Each structure stands twice: as C-alpha cells, then as structure tokens.
Image (cartoon, rainbow, N blue to C red; front, top):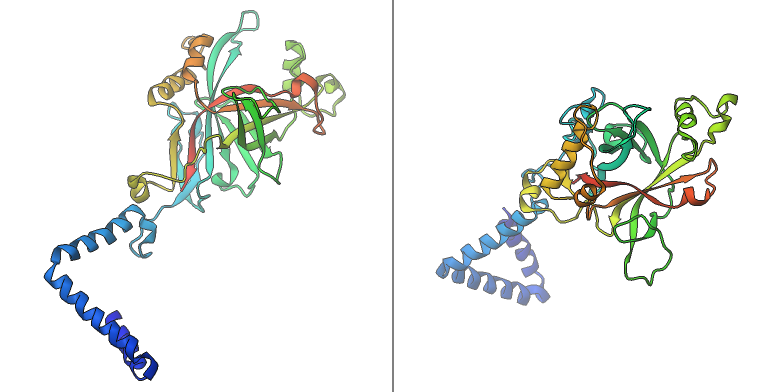
Length: 338
C-alpha cells in the first residue's frame, strides 16, 4: 500500500516539468537498489536484522499495538501487608499512573538501642522501615510520604516535602552525615534528593527518658501538662538523585521487555541485604533479638546511601547542636516506576 502511494505521488510530480529529473533519478535508484538486493540476499538479511535489533534494544520505538506494556499498580498497605515476615516484598493492587523514573518506595535500616525492660540496659538492634510515596498508595497527596515499620506494626508516620521549589541539596563528608560548606575538600560530595519534615511534632530528644516517654504518649502540645515536652520537628535528607541516582535511566534488555512498571532495586549486595532483613525481622521478640555490634553494622551498611536527620523548631528555627545533621539510617532498597 505504501509503495502504491509513493508511486502515485511520483506520478503527480512527474507532471511538473521541474520535478521530472528528480523523479527519474528516484526511479533509477529504486530499480538499481532492488536489483542489488535481489543479487545479494545476505545484505537484505543484515539490513532486516539491524532494524529488528533497534526495536529489540528499545521496544518503545515499536508501534503501540505490539509495544510491551508496563503498568504501575497501587502499593497495598491496608491489610497489614508490610508487617508480615515477607513485608519487604511489596504487594500491588489496582492500576495507577506511573511516576516515570522516580522512587515510590524507600526501604531503610538503622541501628538503635532498644529497651525491652526499663530496668535493664538497652540492646543495640537493627530495625527496618520504609517510606512510601502517597500517590503510589492512591492517595492524592503528591508532596507527602508515609513511613511504616517493616515486619511489625509500630511506626505509622506522615512526612511532607519541606520545600517545593529547588531540589534540596547539601554537601556532606563522604560516607557520613557530617555537613560542610567547604566545597574544596576532596572527601566531600554534593547530595540531592528529598527533604522531608515530620507532619507531627515530637518531644525534645534532650529530655530525660521518663519525661520523654510521657511526652511521646501525649496528645497535643497545647495541653498544659505537656508544655515541658518542648515539641520540635524532625527533618530527613534522603539522597535520591546524587551522588548516585536511585532509579537509573538505563535498565537491562530483559527489564525493557518483561519488567513490571515498578521495579525493586537493591542498593547493596544480596547477602548483606538478606542479613539486614533477617536481623530486622528477629528484632521484635526479646528471645530472638540478636545484639548487633557497631563493627558488624558498619560492615553491613558500608557504602549505602545515608538518611540524615536533624531537629528543627516549630517555626523552622535552628536549635543549635540538635539542628546539625546526624546519621539516622542507611537505604537498602528502592522501588522505582518505569
């Protein structure tokens, strides 16, 4: 059909005196090309294979009717999916728009002192948590993230983007949360990503433990008995763009053809990820909780992107040492839309 259309257009041009020479040359080249390909079938095969390889490498160039379809789906949390022994494997529901090449889930691990008994020393344990983008949960809040604990129903917090203008960026000493303004230092890096602020205020971390516990179970900071709590906000800096993009623009050939719309990307080796997950899974029962020495934690979390934390006043004011960035957790995996 296309060949007949070209011949028809060529016939129309042939009626125009100035175009007759061009049409004649086109027909001559066409005849010579057909004759050459007929006598050299290997060349025809190579051309065909070349065209097919271009479509194989980038199937998005194919016609829509045969193009592989990548659909994104809502991340399910309503039936306590995250609190199961395999809570690090997200469950998906109905279809939703993809947030192309953007993270919609961020799993993290941290080491903290855990009190099973107030009259006994704390135990250093690894915990797991996850930030989920609210739009990926089918919640119409594009600037909001939801934090959950993984494997156990404990944390359930909302976080808002602390800025809606420029992409947040901060310079840190490599492998740490030590912030610096000295761009000339060779051991620093500029990080870009998310700046999240807690939706609810928290009690001041400098309070003694008894007061801190009372304040954490308080209701609202305007009640007289909770004035002592000195409520503040938490901010997290999560490096999702640089120094390394969590959701790379280049994916493998298999993913281009067969991957679902949302892909889980490990940020560490499989063995370390499994070890961290096992420690976090066992952490919730005293009989199974395994104390984690600092040296082991540093080995397991080495090279992982750091989530940095600081405390800010109710109106965003600086709180001295509390407002200096400190390490909160390490990212272990990201779920990216493609």
